[in-house]
Image 1 (tube, helix red, strand yellow):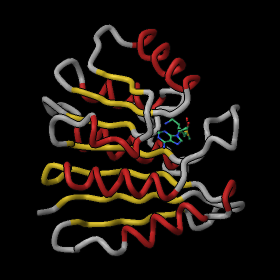
Image 2: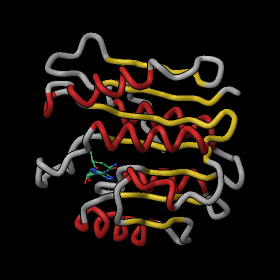
Image 3: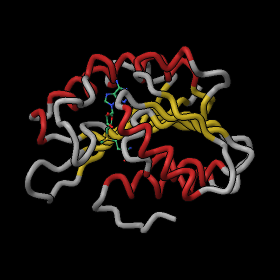
Length: 191
Ligand SMILES: C[S@@+](CC[C@H](N)C(=O)[O-])C[C@H]1O[C@@H](n2cnc3c(N)ncnc32)[C@H](O)[C@@H]1O
């Protein structure tokens, strides 16, 4: 499903998720930033017919695009698309979570002022980590150019405070890419 090209961080995240979860049953996934729906579609395919995917976006346009992409590409409905902020994620989660994705920033080819904000992103992460299964993971793709790395810095400073007996926190970036290379964070619940 993913093309194994590690230079594109979203593809790298998909590679990790596919290899961690494929063939597993009754998965609970969350796409915290649905956008054009590509990550949601990917999660729906990995979760399969017995899995469950929640996807959030604050923009009506993103919700409509995601719903269309899913209905055009899936023969089953294992998802719920929610037009609300991921800051309110706790209102919608019923069962503990295997995996969540944040693909931060703004909707491509859209209003760049409607972007993710560090305070809300961190609020959402802090709620999600209380609902992760043991071994559950949060993947966060952060971009640098649009806000000079402000959101990435705030997330870094929050994640480095997480208890290392309870969570593994990983930060990766592409070292040799020019022009604001994006970074990945992974949070894994280990106890
Ligand atoms: C980079 S795009 C996501 C790309 C998407 N995952 C895809 O596969 O196309 C970021 C999205 O986050 C959304 N967003 C911004 N703030 C949000 C919030 N508080 N809660 C949920 N979504 C938010 C934006 O509207 C935008 O659609």
